[in-house]
Amino acid sequence: MRKIISQTEIEVNEEGYLTDFSQWTEEICECIADEQGICMTERHWEVIKYIHEKHNNEEPLSIRGIKKSGVINIKEFYSLFPGGPLKKATMIAGIPKPKSCI
Image 1 (cartoon, rainbow, N blue to C red):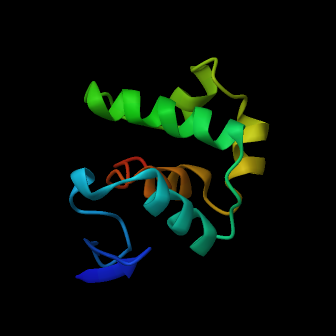
Image 2: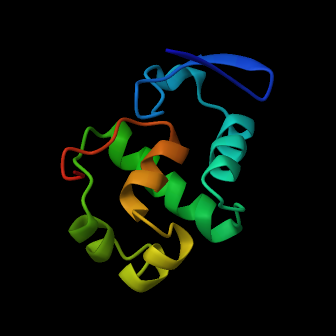
Protein backbone atom coordinates (compact mmCIF):
# COMPACT_ATOMS: atom_id res chain seq x y z
CA MET A 1 0.00 0.00 0.00
CA ARG A 2 1.05 3.55 -0.55
CA LYS A 3 0.50 6.41 1.81
CA ILE A 4 1.30 10.11 1.63
CA ILE A 5 3.09 11.42 4.71
CA SER A 6 4.65 14.85 4.84
CA GLN A 7 4.14 15.26 1.08
CA THR A 8 6.14 12.05 0.49
CA GLU A 9 4.71 8.84 -0.88
CA ILE A 10 5.82 5.86 1.22
CA GLU A 11 5.12 2.14 1.13
CA VAL A 12 3.35 0.69 4.17
CA ASN A 13 1.80 -2.68 5.00
CA GLU A 14 -1.84 -3.19 6.00
CA GLU A 15 -1.00 -2.26 9.62
CA GLY A 16 0.73 0.99 8.64
CA TYR A 17 4.35 -0.10 9.14
CA LEU A 18 6.89 1.10 6.58
CA THR A 19 7.92 -1.70 4.25
CA ASP A 20 11.08 0.11 3.11
CA PHE A 21 13.21 1.51 5.94
CA SER A 22 15.16 3.65 3.47
CA GLN A 23 12.05 5.83 3.17
CA TRP A 24 12.20 6.72 6.88
CA THR A 25 13.18 10.28 7.79
CA GLU A 26 12.87 12.29 10.98
CA GLU A 27 10.09 14.32 9.34
CA ILE A 28 8.16 11.15 8.45
CA CYS A 29 8.82 9.91 11.98
CA GLU A 30 7.27 13.06 13.44
CA CYS A 31 4.19 12.67 11.20
CA ILE A 32 3.70 9.00 12.12
CA ALA A 33 4.09 9.89 15.81
CA ASP A 34 1.51 12.64 15.43
CA GLU A 35 -0.90 10.16 13.80
CA GLN A 36 -0.39 7.95 16.86
CA GLY A 37 -1.14 10.88 19.19
CA ILE A 38 2.48 11.23 20.31
CA CYS A 39 4.46 14.48 20.43
CA MET A 40 8.12 13.56 20.09
CA THR A 41 10.45 14.68 22.87
CA GLU A 42 14.15 14.09 23.47
CA ARG A 43 13.26 10.93 25.45
CA HIS A 44 11.23 9.60 22.53
CA TRP A 45 14.21 10.18 20.22
CA GLU A 46 16.51 8.30 22.61
CA VAL A 47 14.19 5.29 22.43
CA ILE A 48 13.94 5.54 18.63
CA LYS A 49 17.75 5.66 18.40
CA TYR A 50 17.99 2.53 20.58
CA ILE A 51 15.41 0.75 18.42
CA HIS A 52 17.34 1.67 15.27
CA GLU A 53 20.57 0.31 16.78
CA LYS A 54 18.87 -2.99 17.62
CA HIS A 55 17.32 -3.18 14.15
CA ASN A 56 20.63 -2.39 12.40
CA ASN A 57 22.32 -5.14 14.44
CA GLU A 58 19.46 -7.51 13.54
CA GLU A 59 18.70 -8.05 17.22
CA PRO A 60 15.10 -8.90 18.13
CA LEU A 61 13.07 -6.37 20.08
CA SER A 62 10.85 -7.21 23.02
CA ILE A 63 9.37 -5.49 26.04
CA ARG A 64 11.75 -7.52 28.19
CA GLY A 65 14.70 -6.31 26.10
CA ILE A 66 13.57 -2.70 26.44
CA LYS A 67 13.28 -3.21 30.19
CA LYS A 68 16.85 -4.53 30.39
CA SER A 69 18.27 -1.97 27.95
CA GLY A 70 19.24 0.65 30.50
CA VAL A 71 17.88 3.24 28.06
CA ILE A 72 14.44 3.52 29.63
CA ASN A 73 12.49 1.86 32.40
CA ILE A 74 9.35 0.02 31.46
CA LYS A 75 6.97 2.41 33.23
CA GLU A 76 8.35 5.38 31.29
CA PHE A 77 8.27 3.36 28.05
CA TYR A 78 4.53 2.75 28.54
CA SER A 79 4.09 6.42 29.39
CA LEU A 80 5.92 7.64 26.27
CA PHE A 81 4.18 5.22 23.90
CA PRO A 82 0.76 4.50 25.47
CA GLY A 83 -1.55 1.81 24.14
CA GLY A 84 1.00 -0.70 22.86
CA PRO A 85 4.43 0.83 23.40
CA LEU A 86 6.53 -1.60 21.37
CA LYS A 87 4.10 -1.56 18.44
CA LYS A 88 3.90 2.23 18.40
CA ALA A 89 7.62 2.80 18.96
CA THR A 90 8.64 0.47 16.14
CA MET A 91 6.04 1.94 13.78
CA ILE A 92 7.35 5.44 14.53
CA ALA A 93 10.93 4.17 14.11
CA GLY A 94 10.01 2.87 10.65
CA ILE A 95 10.90 -0.76 11.28
CA PRO A 96 8.74 -3.91 11.02
CA LYS A 97 6.50 -4.87 13.91
CA PRO A 98 8.46 -7.21 16.20
CA LYS A 99 7.49 -10.87 16.22
CA SER A 100 6.90 -10.55 19.97
CA CYS A 101 3.95 -8.19 19.30
CA ILE A 102 0.55 -9.71 18.73
